[in-house]
Structures are given as structure tokens and as C-alpha cells.
Image (cartoon, rainbow, N blue to C red; front, side):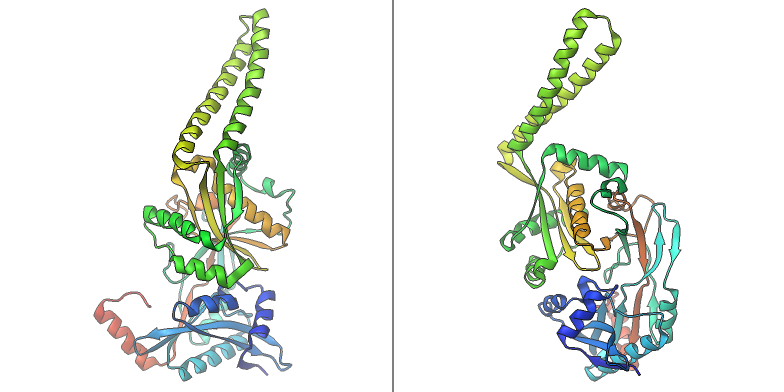
Length: 417
């Protein structure tokens, strides 16, 4: 017999950590962050006849007109192919919401419905029984559509790490990522993890990126609250360039090339009309010229920006199930240093070192026509685009919900709070 119940935090956390659908949105740390945003939360689940937890969720709610929105972001965590389990969890959560003035129940399951290759061809159709069973339990489904949702991530790009090791991961990337990473090593870019006091600087960069690309950035308070709540489960990374080190590396490369030019000059003294030697010399001279150009450019940057500069940065959540790439920025002035590739490669290595099976590049638009500027970057690391099963809603008090929807239409409010 299955039983819906509230769970204590330790029991819930143990379940979340081992469940395949576990994610940062279902962690107890998320409960702490949401409380700062005006949400209330509790842990709920379903136990079997032996008292073992077989399904669980971090259930959150906030005030709407005429009642409360009850929501599970990235859950519940359960076997959606088990129709009876889905029904028990639905009924239990609906009753809980009803007793707490709930108006509507919304689930955003961490369940994939389709996978696509880089050209947008469907390569796998998955978990259709989840859709069937959720509808049978009384939910209405809003499927994912290409574009970016304001409620949840509809499409994500992931790299599955099974069979990949630190020794062969570079070979698993596509040529453009391999080239970029080779360059970052030549440039002498370094990475470091930020401290709490540096988050305003992180926010400064992410806000500049948001303004440039016309999207909404998280607040500084969010980054600070997340940093404090998640501890070592979240990382903020900066990629930086020390100009003196960069200039030294460029000069060293130029000097090595000059030695080869000197050797060719000696050979040309004996064979002044040798076209092959002349061609080699021209090519090497061009490379030296490029290094000299970079040195002069870096000297100018040093005068303007100081000893070093930030090239790129990103925020990551780290779970046993996956490493999730979240918010990031690239300093537009230094795009040609390929720093974002180094940041991603570093965190993929973190996942491999910790035997984490999935690297989640997170949100993409689900459009493969070239309009999604970040998709190509993520695809360079090789993976698949996944479409999630969608958003599922169930009125808790149908009459009041109809009134709420009527007021929304009347006042022209198209998005749910």
C-alpha cells in the first residue's frame, strides 16, 4: 500500500541524492533560497508498504490572487511509468494544497520526452507513458515549444559522460572546441573559483551580457543567497589573463620562430632561388608578425586594464547526478581568447573526476536554424539536445481557478505569477 506523507529533511535528502531525477532545484538548499524570495516549502513523498520512500518532491508555494500556486520545479522525483504511483502522489499533493488554500498545482518534471541530433533530427522518443499517466491523474499538459520559457527550461543540451575519461575527453569534442582549447593553453589563461565578496563583480559582468543580449539577469541577492545556501554544491568561476604572462608566452613563441627563420636564411644563402624555402620563410615571418601584433595589443590592454583582466565567467551547480552550467558571461573585448571553452572543459573534468554521469549545458531554444547563438558553442563539446515533457497543471479549486483565469484575461495579464 502506498502512502502520501510529509518527509523530514534528512530522509528527503538521502532520497534526492540517489535518485536519477535529482537536481539542484530539488535540493534542500533550494528551499532556503526560495524562502528569501517569498516562497514557502515542504518535503513530501510516497512510501511503500515497507515504509520506504519511493517518490519525493520539494513542494513550494506562493500567493496568487484568490489562493496559492503550488509548484514542484524539476519534479516530483518518481517512476512516472507507474500509473498508481503518479495517482497517489497527485492526489496527496492536491489534498495538501487544498488544505493550504491552494488554487493550482503545477509540476515541471525533470523528465525528457525527445532527443535531437545537431541538425534537429529526432533520435529518441522517451517517457511517453509519463505524459499518459500525468494526464490520467488529472493534469493538463502544456508541451514544450521552440523558444525560451519564462517558467522552466524546455530544451537543454547535455553531454553524457559514460565511457569518457579524462584521457579521451578532448578527443570526444568537435574540432572547433579542440582548436579553442589548444589556443587557451598557448595564451596562458588561468581559472579560479570566486569568493563571496567577488559576487558583485560577477553580477556586473552578467548584467552587461544581459543588457547586450536583451535578457533578464538574476539579481545580485540571488547569487549571494545561492552562494551561501549551496556551499560547495555551487561554483562561480572566472577565467583570467595575466598580460605579463601572455606577453612572455607570445615573445617566447616569436623567438622560437625567429630561430627557424634564421636557419632558413642560412639555407637560402646557399639556395637563393629555392621556392620551397622561400615559402616556409614567408609563412614563419607571418606568424612572427602575428605574435608581435598580439604583444603590442596586450601592452595596450595592460595600460588600460592593469596587470590582468577577466575574460569570462560562469556559475555551476554540482550534484551526484549532473554538473549544471547556469549563468555566464564573456568579456566581448576579449572574445578571441576562447576563454569560455576553457571554463566548460574544466568543469567537464570536474564531473569526470567525481564520476558524475551527465554534464548539463542547460537551456537552449530548441531551434536548429542557426538563430540560437549559444547552441553551436555547446554542440562543439558533442552531445544531444533534449526536450522536456512539458508543464503540467491541475486546478486545486476549479471554480476559484476559473475566476482567477477570468480576472487575468480581463486585466491583460498573460503570464502566471
